[in-house]
Amino acid sequence: MDMDFSELDLQLVMYDFNDTEEERCDNVVAGVAIRAEDAEAFAADVERLAVEKYGGATFAGLLDEDLDDESMAAACRFRNAKRNEDLLAEAEEAMAAGMPEERKVRPRPSIKGKTYEQVEEEYVRAQKRWEEFQANPDAYGLDEFHERLLDFTDAGLCVDMAMRRHFESLDPQAQSEMLKLLAADESVSASWWFDVLFGKWPYSEE
Image (cartoon, rainbow, N blue to C red; front, side):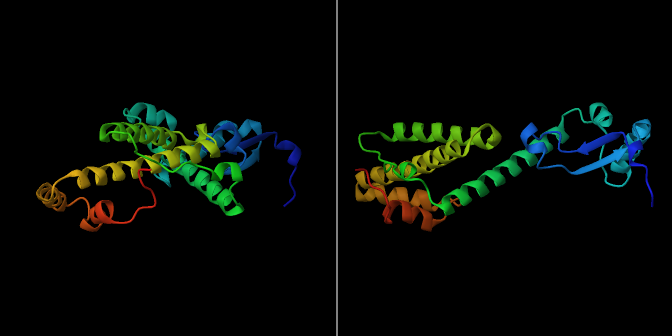
């Protein structure tokens, strides 16, 4: 079919509203060229198709009916999950290529000289920093991802070490009572508690 492309004087691109400017070029959903005079009718057709065929909603409809912004919240969750996935893929690619020597050097976690309360406070801080990253991953680079993930992992190991140290400080009867309490906790398997309290760990207090 012969077409006069010079008549197609309006070019439209569709992308996720929540994409950053940098992401939009890589995440274009569709692109079309139409006559500018057809723009209003084209937009009406697209909205009707989204609602009638795909069960969607127009932005005007969302403003009137989605009073709790559930669609926006769902869109943000989807976008953040995609960004997390992309960043993890980037991290795996970097690790497969080999970590630079200056980033391989990391002190082993230690609880020496710390109380259980101090260890727990450090874990809460590391957990908060990791959750901040998960909530907005595009605001951080790969180095920050790497640091926060390792901080969170190390803080969790320190809590386990502090728990083992506390258990070892108890007399046999108190240890027996503690094991009974832990065994009654159905949210955690008995094998996990055994590994924490009696198993071999890659780190020590030193």
